Image (cartoon, rainbow, N blue to C red):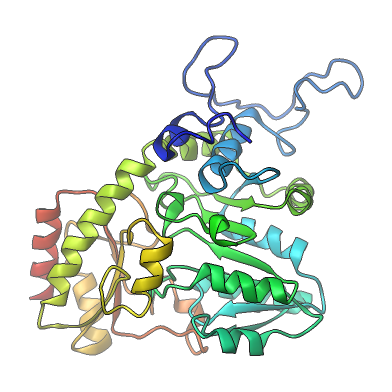
Length: 388
């Protein structure tokens, strides 16, 4: 248990794993831009460091902060940082999946994750079944006794913003002896802490809300069980897909303002949702904060707010959706999400092109917004102009 675990979220984000430097008193952890460390005699590691693939003090600060945010007070829980979100996912699959094994995943899983399962893990021998994870009967039916070791879910999902009941999925997964993995990238630990609801592992692309400034690529796992965490840590070192100290420092810097940024993301998103729901050219708005969203009640129960991601469908089909994406000015046309600047994209041709033709294909009239923290009047005016 970390000394900061009894503190509030924003206090932990600023202080957990980030004590002033004992040598200089610097209040921000230094960037240890170093590959190797001097040893005090053969095998005598100074504070446990020998080589930066195996451990680096800047990365350690990030990992300690991450576990404090996602799993405060949980003995044995551990945070592990990676070079990207997909690197984190791949390392985890090597630990909890095996050739001949099986995973149950959501039928609107992020395209990059689906590609990892279908094009990398499947040839390796790990089969998967994609189902509607809101249908617990379908989840139970998809589990293969003796083979299924993973139930994998995002909530909210990318880009359809489906919300899954984490506690209910945990009950089903654990009854089958499987590990429940929750991708918490869209919500961030400020809005949702899946381990508190029964998840075993939380996945993040730290590129997104945790970093928050569109200037770093990274990933992370927070693992609740000490034994599983140690196994993942072994693979992290053996496979070597770790972030450098500068990338770790950038994510750590971003985390310090996560709470205040998320408050603004959520407030701006709510205002945009109100505009879109009243616009005659918008045929559907996907946002868990709407009372008629199928997952609204679950989101109210397991989230502190509804996030900064908004998706909507438009009249006129794919051509009009693409045209709208090209008509914004404040919203930048680009992939990724979670930065301070607002982004707009066409998932079918951009972030989710890899699932085209599969059961995970997204509607071609769908537009996804990552709502930033600009002045909301500017965002509303930009969208109004683009929709005209």
